[in-house]
Image 1 (tube, rainbow, N blue to C red):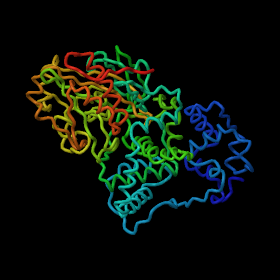
Image 2: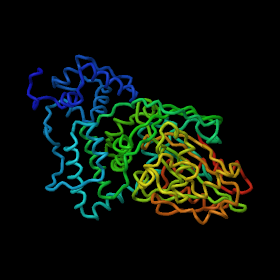
Image 3: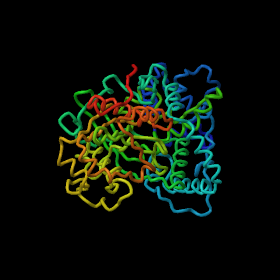
Image 4: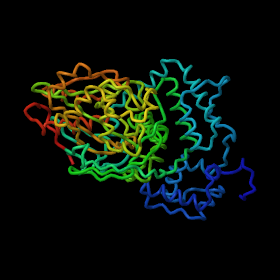
Amino acid sequence: MTGTTPRSEWTLLKALVRERRLTVQETLGVLERRAQQMGERGYALSDRQLRRWLAGDVSSLDGARPANVRVAEAEFGWPIDLLLVADKRPQSRPEWSPRSAEIRELRTNDFISWLASHSALDFEETYRLVAGATDELAVTPPVVRATREHARSQFDRESIAETVAEYYGSSAPFYRARVGGRLLRLSVLTDHDWTGLSLALGGADENCPPPSHRDGPALYLGEHQVRVAVERLAEAEVNDTVMINNPLYRLSGIDIDDSHLSARFECTDFAAYALTADLLETELRDRAPRRLQREPVLMPLRDAWLPTVASGLAFEDRICVGGAVCLVAIADGEQYQLLVQERSNQVVNVTGALAGIPKAFHQPIVDAYGETRISTTVEREMEEELLGRPDLEQRSGVHLPRAAPLHPLNASPPMAWLRAHPDAWRIECTGFGVNMLTGTYEFACLVVIDDPTWWSTFGHLLEANWEAVRLRRYSSLDHDGVLHLMDDPRWSNEGLFAFVEGIRRLGELNSSCVRLPVIERVS
């Protein structure tokens, strides 16, 4: 097969390579990097073998190295037997594209633009795909959509943790703790130095230098990945999900233990997460129940974007975003009031789940250079999610033109009181991990307000914002209630991680005001 072969006779693999404008040597380099991320030690694809694959000059795959096949499938998003046959995809639009007689107006244009810039489609094609998918979803009977969402919601936290552990292997160091005699297993990847922390944030021990503004790893979405992203945008359009393509801090390196936190962050777009790694949870929820029927479970998105434990920890080689999940404990007489939220259906992730509050992406608002510390995000989100200040990075546009929305004079009265009384409260990092469900980094944090004056003065003002449908309040003296809470299957994995580590640390700080379950970390 030569360069003059008509395009309709090209193999799918060759067409995908040409769409990326890669040479043979560049393709070998891309596959080599993918093999390293996947930990495929048996990978050894030669120049000659790749050229045979591109040309479709393969009578049988019996002699192909399994590692070579797995790497090619993960990189290009198609089974090998399809990659090596003639490319029969339409040149103008995918055959799966829904058609719409009248193109509707969409809210997700920024995400459509990102998707067009990171795939073989142009903006108009991508827009039409999302509009058509939205039209089809909008006319789908509500009972069908509700049934699908119900099925997804039945796959609870423990089932997710078990499925993730099965995928990555029994030796992966996932977080486990014994609480009240019961073993909790989470999908959070941890290290011995990353848990059991009491690291004060906001001071000299928190070292997060300004970003260097280096470009992150290149992202290119194949046809299957584009299709899933289009479906995600259609669901956001129909369900009125709040999605704004704000900047996020991606993690590029971290060194943390009980004495210090040193983390490096760079900037990326929210779309780079929302249309890639954030799709892994839905894929797992949709496909993993098949394992109960002993059916093969294929997860091509996970195989491509988060195939191994090593890839999860390779922060410089992938777009790794995340943030802080907090337990807030407020002194009230001889007890602490503990706050937990039930997430609303309008949030992007952990929809309908239990989580700590605040729970936030780590991101800059106006000053990417000066907002890199985790404590900055925790303070900002505490005001927005509990103290009534308008949401700076999501729904509220009124603050966007301001040069200093985080100026101390813009603080709410409850936050102004705390800043005026620095000895009355603290923010600590109690743990760090990588949630392998979506690949996000998670800082478990504890916010403790020790002065009962704050609760008596401002407790009546605490109210969750649009991200939560309900707040729950527990006493630190309610041993049985908190134990029952931790047994609730609706917890998000990172939420329960932060809650468990938070109450462990709270018991160390003030045992006389705490009667909580004993936490034992299991290695």
